[in-house]
Structures are given as C-alpha cells and as structure tokens.
Image (tube, rainbow, N blue to C red; front, top):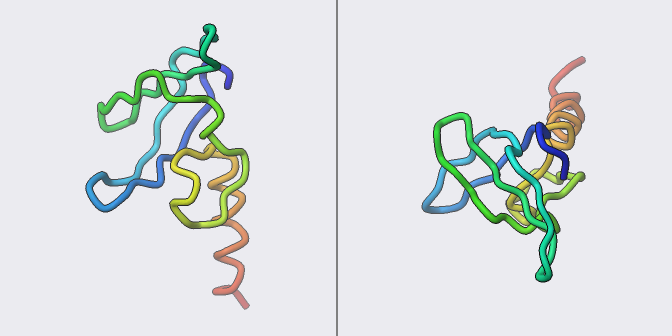
Length: 83
C-alpha cells in the first residue's frame, strides 16, 4: 500500500468506523505492513497490508478498504434511492 493512500476503516462493535491515510509502508521478513493515521487521531500501526482491500461490499468482512473502494460501493448503493 502506498503512502498517502486514503483508507476507510469499517469499525466493529467496540470501535467506530472512519477515514484515515497510510502514513508509512514497509516490508520486513514477516511481511508487508502499513501504518494508518485516522482523521480522528487514532493510529493503527503495523497493519498487515494484506488486510487492506481494494474492494468493498458494505460489510465489516474487510476491516480496512481503500477510500476509492468505499466510494465505489456507496455510489452503487445510493443508486437504488434515485429515480
């Protein structure tokens, strides 16, 4: 995941969802990682890049998705409310 990539965090029962940005990406002998700084100040450091999805289906099955994927989902979902 490239630095500067905007992210949507889907949240869970104990943590609210929200938006953030990848502030650092790195690789070590255990894998590829990203640090994510949320707009509300939370930090998700050492997040496995493999759990950041580029597709979103509206559920929390993917804990982190790109903002681009989130926006694409929302655009399609909102079409059902337009005439």
